[in-house]
Length: 112
Image (cartoon, rainbow, N blue to C red):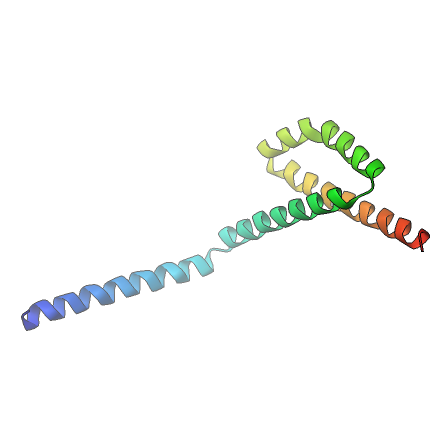
């Protein structure tokens, strides 16, 4: 390999590194994409927690949740198409989880 070819290869490698660094910086500066990722992660976390709480809830609470899910199902379909509604549904699900948690704590405290 000649000196010129070696320098050309080194220049290409440096360009590739710079492009990678620029892409990484652009990703860090893309606030909208970061917020979107965080919202998605939070939604998954809420969904996982809801499933966990639902499975460990007493039978009457599980039945009530199933009825609620059935009633809310059409709204969930609409919410998927409308981002503002999605936020409201997530907020409602969070409130529902908090209510279930409180009911479970009271039931636990009453059983002691």
